[in-house]
Amino acid sequence: VVHLHNVYHQLSPVIIKYFKDAGIPVVMTLHDFYVVSPNYSLYHQGQSVSVKQSIRQLILEKQIKNSFWISVVAAIIHKRDRQFYKMCDRFISPSGYLAGIVSDSYPHVPVEIMPNFIRQEEVSADGDYIFYGGRISPEKGVNILLQAAAVLPQYKFKIAGDGPLFDQWRQEYQLSNVEWLGRQTPSAVQDLLRHCRAAVLPSLWAENCPLILLESLAIGKPVLASDMGGISEIVDDNGNGLLFTAGDVNELVLAIEDIYDNSIYSHLRKGAISSASKYDAETYGEKIISFYEQII
Image 1 (cartoon, rainbow, N blue to C red):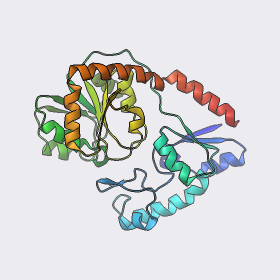
Image 2 (image 1 turned 180 degrees about the vertical axis):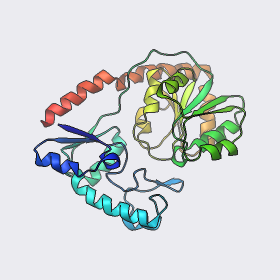
Image 3 (image 1 turned 90 degrees about the horizontal axis):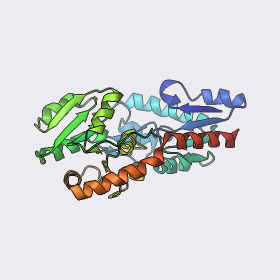
Image 4 (image 1 turned 30 degrees about the vertical axis):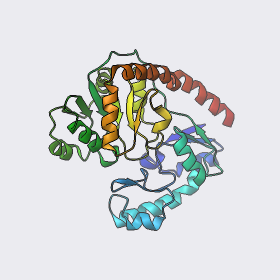
């Protein structure tokens, strides 16, 4: 069995044909929307775009790198590559949300829903700040978090990560209760998670199965997240975290205030700890081996 990840970014999906010609089953794990659209995030100029949009719309709106001609080339390459994706024996989708979209575009390729996994960690103590770890870019909604932080000066926020809007937003939102940490090592991110009160993911695009949420649950920390894409499959509202409408600053403010209510927090902590077992690495390993055996 050949198991592929993100071949369209680093290699080329043409390798699928060579494996199939050799009689080798091919499985591909999906991490974004590229198999269904050249705009792999389905996000453009501050809003989500429909997977059913026409290629003409994608090109005229310059959705790829804000360039007409790059969008044209991307559309041509994507049309060529679809013939190779159709050759896969199975797709693996970390979320039901993405699986549904892909199934509509590739009805003859079975899609297995298999969430990402994380190694279980020792449950950590309560912390005193809200933590965001990830890319500082438009689709991640960090500006929504910053607007919420501006009206909650009594609470501390720590932001780890880098991206195209890091300098702009750090200048625009000069808040004494926000600490900008920049790019951090994976071990440093884990340490920041261990000492936070809750993790937050204010995404404006349809996330698939974000690892930062699983990492938070694995150490017993509740998560605050927007209701986009596959996020609601991980975050059980009022169970192991709190969901809010994407882009709604007021709802995020209320969620942050709730997370500092000790009775609510205690309940969510218990939910986070109990739900983390669903993403155990050993369980995932058993599932994937069984999955391979089915297609050999």
